[in-house]
Amino acid sequence: MNLRHIIIFLLSLSVLAGCKKDDLSDVDLMMEGDPIIDIDDYVAIGSEWALEAGGVTEPEEGLGYFWTLKGIVDENDTTDVFRFKFGDETGKYRLRCTAFCEGYYDNPTTKYVNVIDTLFNTSLYIGEIPGMQVFIDPRDGREYRYVTVGGADWFITNLAYKGAGLSYLENSVMWSVFGGYYTYDEIMSSEYEGGSICPEGWHVPTEEDWAALALSFTSETGGEDSGKEYFGVSSALMADALFCGEKIWEYSPDCEPGNESGFSALPGGYHSVGEFIGFSEYAVFWSADAYENGGLYHYIYYTDSDLKISYGTGDFRANVRCVRNSGN
Figure (cartoon, rainbow, N blue to C red):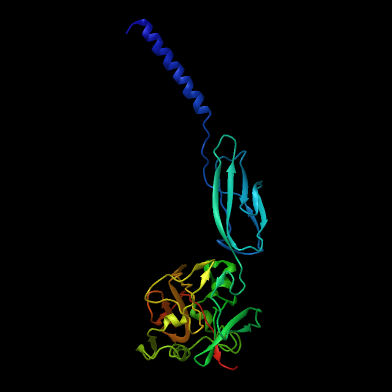
């Protein structure tokens, strides 16, 4: 290589190095951490919220946030505390928080929020129930629908008394949708007038009550005398319900919801070892009858046409349907 070629080669390297240096100076940096949107997955129509921006740890200086809520706040709202109110329209809304800073790429977080109406047969739709009547719990003014079946009046929605228990996902709006999830000790206590968590004049169903309900739709039983299973009855107890426009029960050709009883069982699952389990697959209801160190419960599983029985102890939580003698 002659001297002329060497000089040209060195000049080319110098130009390339200069270009790389200029290119790097124009490249934006990535932030550390992501914006946090601290709002429940399900919220009530008309609810008001104040969400505080945060979550990004780098950069610390010059960092800002802007928010959008599709259909409500479509223009960028640049603020650290985003205040807004949902209207009366149910549906799924897209909420986005974007972190921005000069010299950094924008960093968005998106969350979809379901806005629901907790009035009966709105966001949760179980259909028209013949013979349905209304009872108002004098303790908190909450309305419950009930039907008469098997010689007794049965709630067709889960008990939602906030004196104990958890709501689904520990989300406050869910008290009015899937009711409460209670331990056996929470539902059966001498602290309650009448000995159970149900309103005065009502009680947590005994095994005798469950038998009267189930035997209205089947004559086949199995299991021990202390805890019977009822064959082929599940369909008559299951509501073909919709939540936010979608069927709640998982589909199985072996057990399709029919709800001939009006009982309107919903697959809210259960709570055990600190988590909610079996949503859309299991409906689980306490019996008043004690067993071992806890109590019996009856359950429906979406692929099984039989009303099953088991028992729960400790922190196991299930739903409650209250019952009373018909005509009270």
